[in-house]
Image (cartoon, rainbow, N blue to C red):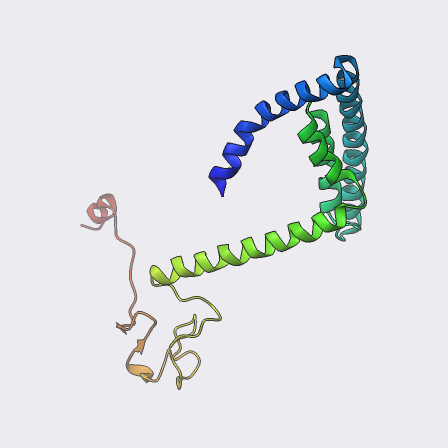
Length: 193
């Protein structure tokens, strides 16, 4: 999929130039240039309006501590559509108009939400596989011990059924209780001698 996207982006300028030549042959060069300039002006207008509205909504949401009213996807779609309209070309203008038209935005929002959910699910599955491959226990996946090292049948704070003679933690080895003292420096040793 990423290779396909890279190839499409590399081919886009050639397709745009070819399409400008074809449209220029149909309606004439002056009308083609007028259409491209008007699409750019429309894109600048929409980008300014959507950017101002998005900033105002985000500022209001931060002041009240609530999420933005209309969500963040609509202003982002309007801004992306404005940017695509600013880029000279008919393919990018078509994509930009799809993003800014109120009729098509709900369908695109639905498609994006579905894509994002599938992508998040795949990322979660890959992360779980990596953690399991490294020997980590994934919360909610079960397992013989809980995150605090207690085994089934053990009392909280005891570490498991082994009792006071030590506990068996999640590593499976015996835990020996003890204490340590910080290592003395050479100067402290000489002063005591």
